[in-house]
Image 1 (cartoon, rainbow, N blue to C red):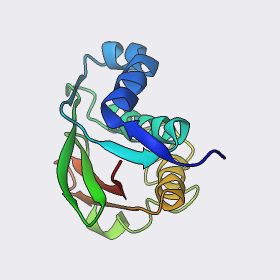
Image 2 (cartoon, one colour):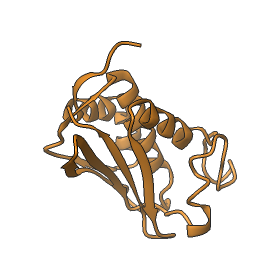
Image 3 (tube, rainbow, N blue to C red):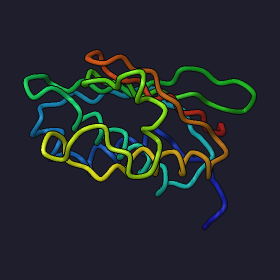
Image 4 (tube, rainbow, N blue to C red):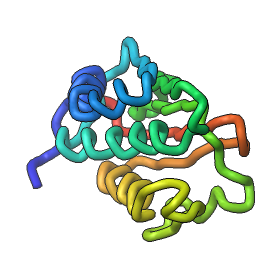
Length: 153
């Protein structure tokens, strides 16, 4: 793989939004992102990372709820930037939060929510490849906030 390069997260999110436009429109979702920094990374992997996270936010929401998803810059320190992807989805029970990053880990039946249980495990691998860290805070019924720590660009 190519060497990491400075990548505008604003550009990455525009690409992800274009890739997911049909799903966003079908769900009448509101995706917000403004003033995101650049990070050192691999553009294709960062697209995959944010596409997985935003797809989850679109998927794991009550059927009668308009998905609200925001990607925000939280802080920069010691050469790393912290980004968060926040949604108003169904949330993740405390007892299940540690296993969501395990490969093929599914918290819901496939008849309730489609998916393979690979998305967040892939996100963790992408973040680790970039020398970063991923974790989440969530409350069942009150949405999820996925935190990403990536090298500053």
